[in-house]
Length: 567
Image 1 (cartoon, rainbow, N blue to C red):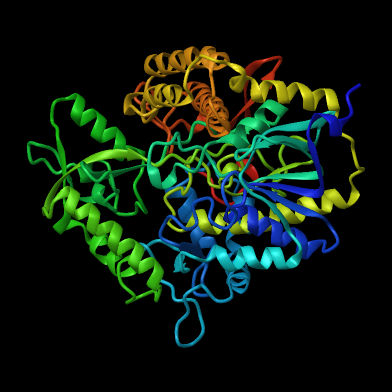
Image 2 (tube, rainbow, N blue to C red; image 1 turned 90 degrees about the vertical axis):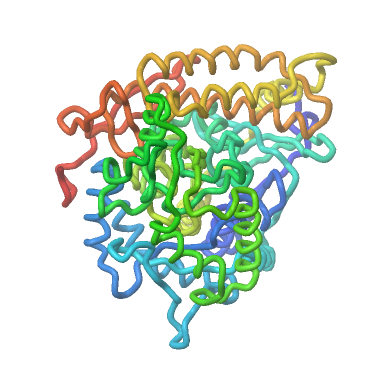
């Protein structure tokens, strides 16, 4: 038998965290605070503290301020957002722990959260009727958090792509990957492993393209279940040239005939853009009523929000203000300064289906998942994809779930026996991972990226769904999967892209198989052939699992009988 150290460079940790964005670093600090003597290692494909989404968005956190009602929040969420598929018990914990979580994160940042003259968080509501509050942090918030983690003794390994998990008798005992700089093969031994790699974006928009779905794909291949994979993608309307989303454009939407479309699919209680925005756009264009336009003068929220991200009037954040004023100015130049503006749908996908319980443990012992990697898979948010029509929930959930998942992982690791990964398994994975580098000719990974996008991005496949169109799209994905053995990489960067294509195929297949199973429309899942919600048959969660190489589908009844809010 081959010795492990002869297969690759071996690193050991009590707790291995895959991903160095906001969820991963929050998890690392929480793990160290819970068990100071534990060895915590964060492995990041890019650069820890800069990776992920935290420094690329609005820097907004949703939470429950002292004047907000947890019960009102849960009731609104269940009735208007998650459509009764929420795990209402977990959602309550999320809400009740929110203020303390934001306080803790602010301590880690050294005061990067915005506060008013009284010392409280500067907070407002996205819409006056939404029963939660928003506060904000400066966009460089992760830098001091990263420094804090290092000061606590957290170890970091950057520019290293983790590809697969190591298992022993069904338990996860580590992972394998390689340096994207020099190709060194790493074998990570760990008592507990935390996936914090965010979701899957299919590389459709530059701002969110850092989400490559590697965490959910490696978890699935190791035997973990996926859940609620049918809910996605998140979609907004954007300028035709800039491709930058226009906030609340769907509230003032017209077709080429001048017909006001918004009242047909928007209610007064809608908190954010929903799936019907994309459905209406698709159906109007198919009927020959395009192009579609938004009337910016009618868009109250657009003008109200500019003062939040484009000035220091509400939140004093010079770095964020500079970033957003520059971005918005470029978008205006590209799209033109028009009060009536043509719009197109853009998909800001955040596919996040790793199945987890209340402790953020997956269905595999020793494996935990936090942040956007398991946002829908936790069932906390119900029939939506991140950020589930609740602005600011993405950043908050990353910190909240990172803390909770890390504490659970630390508790598990404190009692777990040290296991020696199987050298034969590590060697077999090594051959598979590096195979594209050994091919003199083959398919470039970016060619297959484009093919996956073409099988996912069209709204008739992924947003306004029918059985026939989804089966067509799934057939295209299966055809792409058949080409994966022909991928060729000229260097380690392309090698990482080869793995990302495999992850994209996995995400798309779970999405379509789960969507085909749910024969109703609910939340962010719309079936043109089943346009109505069916509470009699579909108060269920859909799970996916690898059984002897086949993706199998099963359902689990939502325990609505023990929840306070029922349809």
